[in-house]
Image (cartoon, rainbow, N blue to C red; front, side):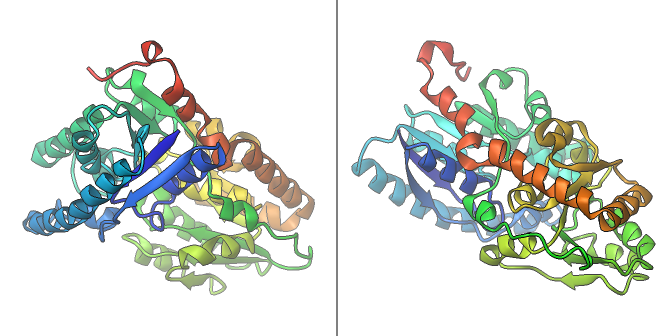
Length: 376
């Protein structure tokens, strides 16, 4: 097949689409990218709900990107038939442009989370009101424009409108090949346990509880923790963890260097939040950490249990004491640590490698037309 990966997606901020592209190419398909990243991340887009007067700026930026996307799409069509269009994550608007440009071509929307759900999780819009209605409308129009909707968990599939669910395909987020190549050998048992967290410090990450857990580990010289990232809960996390002077705070690690950086640690931390969104996602960092050969420690939620299985160690969401105790256990039992690392990597090799991630999507696209649910 010949795919067109299309949109304003940014693989550095949201690597999910890069996994899908890797997987399609590994499966023998051709993928042509027509991509012009919008210079605005998720937080910036959602923040405009608080400052609606900035929406014309978004429209102007989107218009500039779209003019280049239209030109790129025309070139791609001249060079050969496009069998399917993949619209990358945060493509709520891009998918409507794709539908206009490719009226008779299957359109696949990578729909990890809804706009309405993201705004609610970040405290920028309640369950009602004009803002939520607008975001639900944006979500609905995006879904109506797609022939296939890709989600990452059964919970996200079940949260889709009933008429959209038959068009949904569940695929794990997975990790790109660079994460699998980054695995390092085990370090001496006498070294401190090296733990890493990478994130944007949003409520679903539960970094308030993580900060409390770090404070409980203040008297544990055998545990070294590195916290990477910035975000809305960063200052609160630092304040809560202040008693632990061995925590290293890093603003960010560039995308190309991140896999090797994470792989140099023993344990990769997932999420620990108690929000509704935190109960329904499997964070990218869990898949990436497993691929890099780290032990995974994350919250015990149904989607993480289902998608990750025995590849992770689980603690109750929002339980700082349990999180601290789990890290103490790994620091004191290096055999358990080695087993946790090996189990995570084995699961990643079997389920999170790009070609395995896209298998269900390719099956749906190549299925006989009469067996595939269509848009209403």
